[in-house]
Image 1 (cartoon, helix red, strand yellow):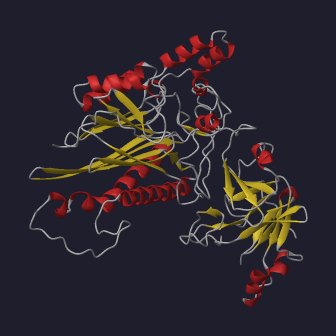
Image 2 (tube, one colour):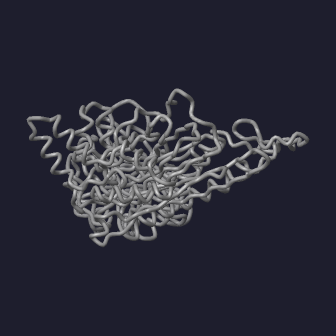
Image 3 (cartoon, one colour):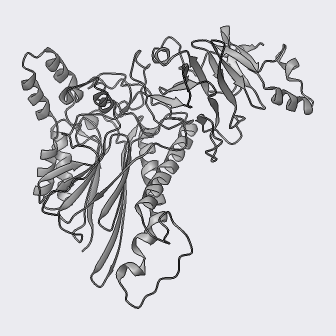
Length: 560
């Protein structure tokens, strides 16, 4: 029997009224071989919820979904369908393996191979979105959910808060396979929120902690989470952006009611009734005439509830696989929760629910975890990050305290650093890539190990370890040039005296204080990648008194 699937995207009722755009994207490919009594379908399903507004988030979602689909198709199509030995031809003897794969066989489609292909595809998408970001000077980003179905198994990976569910008709069960990369999930796990109902209307309920893109200068590899689930004949797999569950647009009123309630249970029930729940989704899907009808019914139902955000939905099933076992199987890596109300942003949200004021997305870097202030309803508008917000903290380097922090101008990720952390250009050689890596143009002078942060005698310093120099901003827009002894020697070999050019004695290091800006590029360059140093993560969180809207203060000159 043929694999069945249906997909759609919809702008959503609220954005339709506001003449907004649809930033979601879907890319699908289904391939099948049939011989005798054997069917072997391979399904590739990719869905993205773009972040950043017109000509930004929608392009990020389109680029990411199409790039991942192509990469997976190129890598998996042949091994997925065109293996004669899979069709039980008695007289056929397969050619001895010529290429060793992860599990020791040639042309196999093992879980390891599929996960590696998903990771490679998402990394390729990350690099395409970063290149687009450098072209437009913006910070486009997107969530992604990716599913590869073969031999009755769904292999999947995800970044952000778009989701995958399995709806089982026999057991009337809905299982969420993914776990949202969301601020409220982190708060619940840390015990900072102890009420899951309140988490749905929390001020940061609109914030995600991971995305593809978000900066032109992030790490080229994305932190992807993976899972695997067996799929049965009476299963329907649902891929969806948060627009399906994010229907009710007025979270603020519910939050106020919750905070002021004498009868909290009654408010909890009101909150549940405002959401599109798993039970309602299952009922709509199972009562529909076919998958196409189910997709349209889901869109209509979400819009009737308020249609707060764009909607993207894919439904898929394989009638030719095995029936469900008598006992409902456990699938997914987490306990299923009721559908929550969340709107795509990168944390922390710069505005309350129901408004369009937001801030920009943020960067991604070493151990890529993006967080910033991007609202899918903002159409690209921006605001300053909220003081004391819940910006994501990423560890850069390993070592004992003391630790400090650095940020990149215009981004919200905080990098916690220890003595010896290096900063520079990201390379394909993972053993020699810096702790904080930048993706820069080929002709950019940034080296792979360009600068090092050091703690000595109670003070933090930045040391140049490059051949071209590091620049540290002092007062009144004056910049000091740092140059390693090796770099200075190299310059002199070519007849250039860096000391004379700097009009003073050259130094390799400079002391860092809270708010000190430094860059690996000449600060006279347009929009140089500018770092700021902070003596602690807490100081970095409260950094709004240092304006980074232009990437640093205006250039005035050099002094040593």
